[in-house]
Length: 179
Image (cartoon, rainbow, N blue to C red; front, side, top):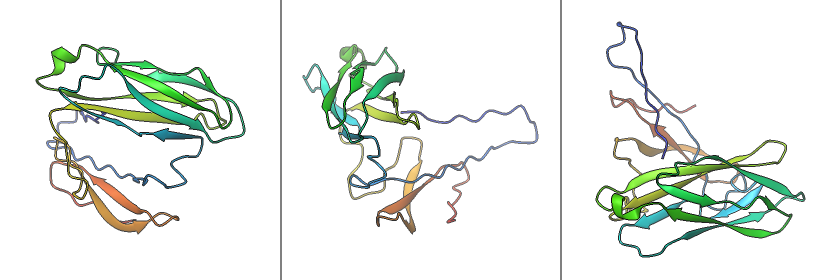
């Protein structure tokens, strides 16, 4: 997983505050699958799982051939075998392997990899990879990271009727504002 860090050399700022807002797209939201269907959209791997590799399925939902390029990855944790191209309507797999699983069995990790498609928008997909002891959250509870960042319902919805959640992060317990 990626996380922001805030640094400043301004002596008048004693406790910087950072607010992040984002839209969470539900599984079947049409905005989620504009170029590629990705399934699953993230890997949640329990420590002790004896599989050697994990598969992320891609389906090209455009009418053009897409070239795929790995943009970001931490090769010390995750090995990613990304197909170079995918034709219209074609289904291909990304093969993901955990690197040196034994060294991470005590602490686990949360990483991600990002790849880019060659469509006109150069759409990027960031796939989270979590390797941990047990499920990190219950599906009916707000998701909370180990840093206290929580997703909260905003009362807003997308055009397709899905709930928009707000990420509220800060050291003053600041509330996310609706816009």
